[in-house]
Length: 473
Image (cartoon, helix red, strand yellow):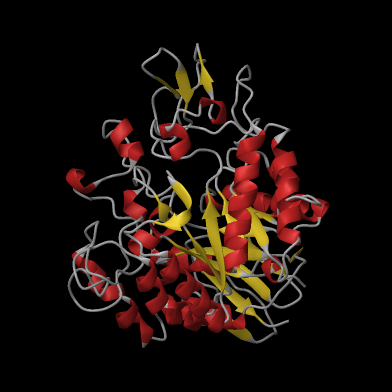
């Protein structure tokens, strides 16, 4: 079975993982130094958010050079060293590719290669996902499209030179040995300017079929996972049909409330859509763009239960750095340190995504909690002293220990069968375990003759409220 069909993949946001040089910003050598944590945690791979050369208007998702490392993160030699150490530890490495847009500092845009971008004499009514119009006017009166910030002009994927360039960029990183790609805004590259939406155009699938051929031409089960949001599951499944990409993120699951009926409906729909095209389902609770699920669900107890529910499902799971520590969203960052364009372009009306990007706490009893020899680019809460990696490592009841135990016990599975359960409880069986998740506040009696493997909170004859447990089959 291909590794990605059942893998647990850990997202690393490089600015916030670990800092090696004391400038307060995470970097590639910092990640390399901490890869032992990921190997010890038990994940199969790491996904690196962008580390390319960038003005950093959007945290690196505004790329000015796709074939080099931004100096704030290190060098290409540092990347090669990270990749080699990851592979030595048995970890695969997936890198972000950002094909919908470049930075406005990219040589093509600077040199006025308008044929490679989307310029028009008259804009339409589209609005940017970061707020405000999706068009900006240049000196001669024309307008260019940017679905995100004005510093992120959208590429013209009808131009064969754009397609050839990205084919070459994929090969550049595959030749260096990366194991796959996370495709940013995978459903957005083709635009119908006369349409009502700028996502999920039929012609985008031709691009992904071409990329699949490139991936298949390399040994080692290279893969790609698509970011496809605001799209129905049946449409998302088309991005992972035969001959296209391998996986797609499950945003319905990520955005689901703590509600058993909603979660069951989403699980059923996700499994059905994935089965129809022969792809594995994916599950995710948090990422660099969404509020951390500890905060969304109202506390660590539910977050722990959600983690065991997710990791018990068939398919592949994605973890976001820090969720194994039970980190909450930081909601009270000072205005002056916020950098997210969602915050800037909304005039402060939207908090943006900085709160889920606060640097990780590794050790010690005061900020920056071992993040690096200097400070940290976003301030860490003082009470994170209780949830550092160091503080949790020796505690068998910690969230870190729960994740380590879950990943040690987890086994590949492909099928799910629902079992009878009390109201408010999700109970199912896979080839490898039985799972019961009590999404109510009250304990319930679950008759399981099998051996209890793990539970998200202490069990005493009943399944407590807001708790998930695993049993052997």
